[in-house]
Structure formats: C-alpha cells, structure tokens
Picture 1 (spheres, helix red, strand yellow):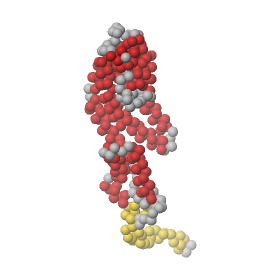
Picture 2: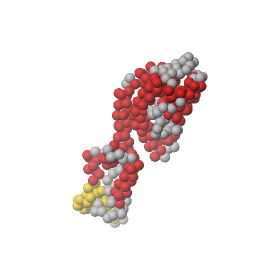
Picture 3: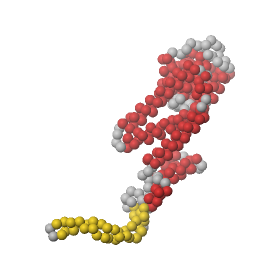
Picture 4: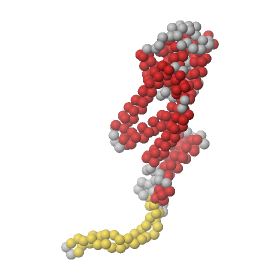
Length: 315
C-alpha cells in the first residue's frame, strides 16, 4: 500500500486545535485499549480505536487519514492507565503534520518505558495497597469494601486518563522530558514500596498459616483451684496436681521471626516463578497440595483430627 511507504503527509498545513469534546471522547475510548489485544501487535487495534476521533478531525485529506491510521496500527505495548499521555503527544505531532517516521519513533519510545513505570505504580503499589485495605472490610462482612475499591481505583484511573491527555496534548513533545526526567528514581521508589506492601500482605493475610504441632514433654506439678463441698457450703481449695507439658513448635518459630511459615511459602513461589519458570496457576496448585497433605498428617493448626495417627496434638 502507498500509505505504508509515505514519509510525510500530502497536506502539511497544521490542523486547528482539537476541541474538548473530542479529547474527552478519546479519553473514554482509551479504556478499550486492550479489547483486541493480540501477540502480534499487542494493543495497536485498541490504540487506533481510541485515537481515531482526533485523527479524523486533524486529517481532512483521506489519503493522509489512511496513512495515519496505517502507521498507528504499528506494534504498541504500554500501561492502559497512562496511555493517554502518549496519545496527547502523538496528537500534537499529528496536528503539526510532522514527519511520519518521527511520530512513529516518539510513539514507540514513549509508550514502552511507561509500561514499566505504570506496572510499578499501579499493579505493584496502588492496587495491592487499596485491595489490602478494602479486602479486610469485605472479609468482615462490609459491602463498603468492594464498592470503595472500585470507586477509588476507577477514580484514579479516569483522573489519569483525562488529566494526562490534556497535559501532554498541551505540552506536546516537551511532555516527554517532563515525564521521564526522574523516571528511573520514581520507578525504583514505587518498586520498593510495592515490595514493602507485599511483605505487609504476607503478614496480614498469611499470618493464619501456622504449625499445629504440640509435642508432649513430660509432666509438671501445678496448683489448681477446685470447688469442694464443705458441709452445706461450696468452697474453693487450691490443690497440687501433675499436668502434662507440651512444646508448641510454632512458638519457637515466632521467636525466630513471626509469620515465618507464610514468608517461606511466598519465597518458594517467588523462586519457582522466577527461577524455574512456573506459572502462578502451578504455584496455586502446589499450595493446595501442601495444605491438604499437611492437614492429613496434622501439621497445620486448626484443632482438627488428622487422617493419619500422629504422636502429637494438633492445636
């Protein structure tokens, strides 16, 4: 196709500024960025669908519009929450009818780093934090939890979609410098925060995973109070009795590090995914097997009767 080989548009007259209605429409359509996700061009179809209203306003020449639509179907992969930042820059360049190869290069070089930044900010930081707080509300039986989660995440997402689109469109290519000036430091800080939150979630939701092994360790004399009948009165007497002593293995683990068992299980999953190439589904299956086998042999706490006779008491 001719549009694939063109390096500049036929009509080089800069287009007028896009109206707010068109910008708002594109911000809303950007929510469908991954609707036609595929492994050949990733988010390109959703990207073109979102930016198309602006391109139609900018390119009144049909050949130029076809050319623009063609190169906007190039491979694209970025974070869906902040894709409008890239969209605003590209729109400002399209409006000025800049060189097509320059627009392509800016779009690809801007979109790719934002994918990593967005992952660190949202999937590894904001979403786990909000989910951790609201999930506890849901566990406690409050319907406010899931509603609050949706309202907060959706609110942040839409604020970013609209705000970044207007900001980057007004600034043009200058927005790239402003956004990436401290990108490395910002991404590192967000990643550290994400790891911190994961550790907090391990202690909060994994703290119930404990060893239930209580081993007999002889007997000891202990003073106990008993009710005895003295004539017509019931009185309390202190007597000395021999009572069994048990060693709770979990107590020793807690002295080393509280929540050690869930931490070790989390690190095991991390090792299997990072080093052995396991999928999260396989790790979930492994945790299920560990839980069932441990319950059969009375390893995990819960006060149940294990299927296999064991020489210890299950707490």
